[in-house]
View 1: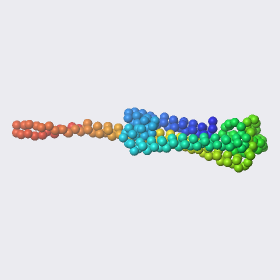
View 2 (view 1 turned 60 degrees about the vertical axis):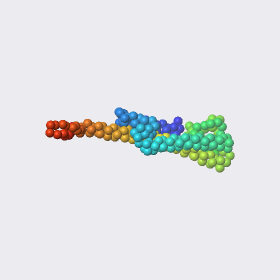
View 3 (view 1 turned 90 degrees about the vertical axis):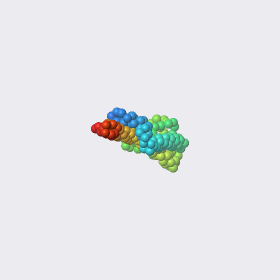
View 4 (view 1 turned 120 degrees about the horizontal axis):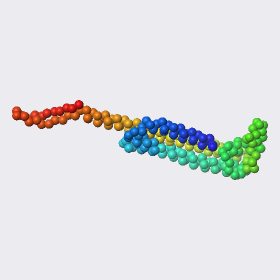
Length: 220
């Protein structure tokens, strides 16, 4: 597993843990419904509560993060293909290899230079010995160009991680906000209903032998 996949896995696990902690706080009534709606689609819960501007804000953030993930992943894949093709054409790399192999190819002029340094360090486990683990650059300029392209590719893939983290945070923030707003709305509705039940004022006409009047009744 690459560092990219390791970081992404950590982010996903952290998001799930945060979600598990947050759900019980809004798991009943309309608050729970709004919470789950916005957890699934940011802004959905706010829209169901009539908060359209806030809903648009959370949904726009979702679209921005998703666009960032797709664009950075596409750019990272494209530049990765470019530096692999450059290594094949100008360093004689055969076949496809993992990321760490191309890091070494971009930092050393030949496999012999790399292996000699590893032997000096007595790091024999890192020596390349397979027939397809061979490279020899035709010029320093092509090696440097390949390394620059590889770095751009790695940065693009790292950006995917940050956009994914932003998306997870947006889901949780939208869900918690929707759940709290629904709870506040429910509390206000209950308070209004309670007040109307506690105090009622009505009137009725009253006819007597000496005239006509009105009778008021006030119940608390």
